[in-house]
Image 1 (cartoon, rainbow, N blue to C red):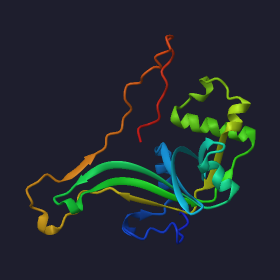
Image 2 (cartoon, helix red, strand yellow):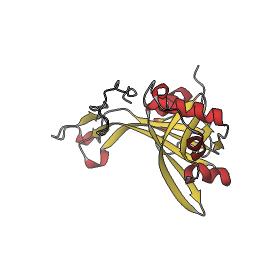
Image 3 (spheres, rainbow, N blue to C red):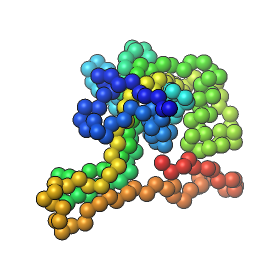
Image 4 (cartoon, rainbow, N blue to C red):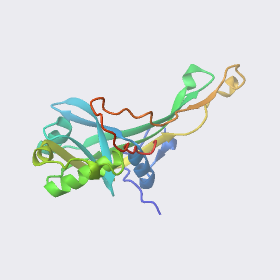
Length: 216
């Protein structure tokens, strides 16, 4: 049986609650499929939102940045709860009126106070998990990370518990009076696939092509 996310005054979906879910496995699937998230935080009353790549291990959501970057260093120096959103666009919903156009999507919003990963070996292990998400199996082919790189990279995490899922996966919902309006209506799905890979132009030797993650 799937576990439930913690429904709090922050994580509770108030607008469109019929599209909300607190199923943890569903949240995990969206987090794992996406390659980027947006980290929201405040500093001296100003809101900042930072896009970054993320990954998950178990019940924890991880992200990284330069060790002095705002979205890593800020909430550690002055502990505060951050808000993170992960979103996947699945299609355009074209209705019979402008008012009822929409999109089909999947999203997760998380809240938590970041925890710094400071142990050297654990940081390197997390680097590997992240790289293997981006390109499965690539980590073992790379030049090993050095101490300077490890020190320069900050890694933080929050537990995936205070969070919610919101999604739309349905055709247009028009006013009944417009159902016979003479215009095409329906869903234009977003097709996700990786394009042709482009080798670094300064590289003349041939190597095995990298693997890409599954299309999300």
